[in-house]
Image 1: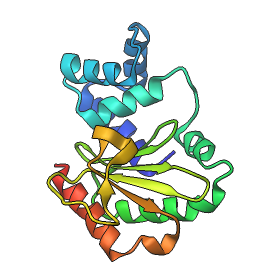
Image 2: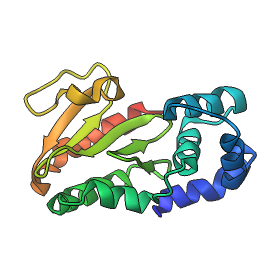
Image 3: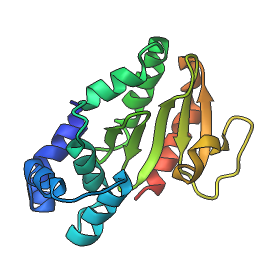
Image 4: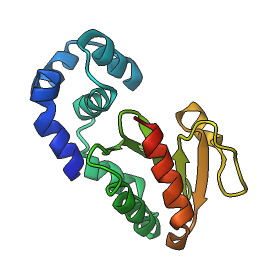
Length: 180
């Protein structure tokens, strides 16, 4: 399990009033057709912050895949992309101790108080990095969000680790700072 996620689970009783097991039991008594419905329920009815709500719902799903399993499944047949994925995570973890890395079935969300980045293995040779940087003009490299829709404002297509350069890191840092 990711260290940040484990810290979040450890802090859950103090920050949310319940342990992960208690939240899981509560969610089992409810029927939600979408992930977002359960997240919104926890936020509105129980005052849980988005990061905690998202983690609780993700870890409460019937699918017993661990976060590590989710990432492994995403990169099966795309193992050559893992060095890029790991380089992005290594940098993101330096931005602050409030960064939460949340693997999902097809992508990995990077959250502060709000999601500010999304890592998705788009093809066998490319990772799409979604960024949320409002009012930032697009460029040839910093494209519009494309398939990410409203989850992100921009997308950067990465095909090699050298593309995780100072410019990209500055965009990640800007997205992080705006996710307060």
